[in-house]
Image (cartoon, rainbow, N blue to C red):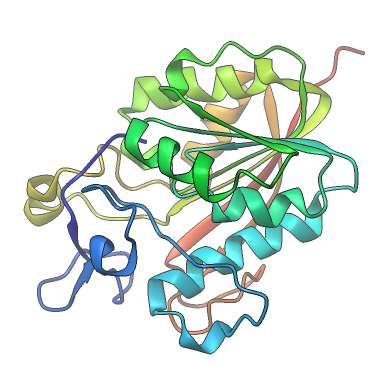
Amino acid sequence: MRSIISRVVSGIKKNLLVKGDTYDFNKSNPLGNNGERVDIQLQRVFNFDKLDVYQKNHYKRYEYAKDIINSGDVCGDFACGTGYGSVMISDKANNVIGADLDSEVITAIRERYKRKTNISFLNENLLNLKFYNLFNTIISFETIEHFAEEDIKLLLKIFAKSLKENGQLIFSTPYRQERSAGAIKLGFHLTFDIDENKINGWLHEAGLKTESFQYQNYDTHDIQKNLEKKDFIICIARKITNG
């Protein structure tokens, strides 16, 4: 996930970047490095209620993924950011490989989580990943909107190639975020108006099949199949097998 400006308008209102409240990723994230990365300190005594609104949503997505993966899975966490989600997944998975574009962030989290022997962190552009038939599950939260549409198609093909037969992809993106002058000026998202139809088309082209869509908002943070207010869409897809 490429670096972006540090102050980002928090999408509290449905699917819009609005003027007013701002979310400072560097304030909540000492590893922000001018990027859209959420950091959460995973302490022995963890208090979810003390997280800010963006952290709560982000944490709940990894919690959801952890519930879905199987014990002993090999997992990729692509656009892993500050790595706390990779750590959450590693408590259940056998091995986790996290990848992020920012070299300073990767250097920092390698040191922070050096005692987690079943995690490897790579400094890599996701479009340059060279894995083949390795992962049971790939997780990639808040990633595809940072790419142009043609690169989203390429990225999903890379994910499909990296998955084992019948492997699953779990990813999220803002739901139907409108293309606006303000959003374009901020510059951190390149693709807008992402909905179920677009995702289904991209996945099919990549050799993946949609299994389910879930949704999330800034009000409850919970991930549910049916929500009236949808700020994020979470998709589970499966690699199409030959036979």
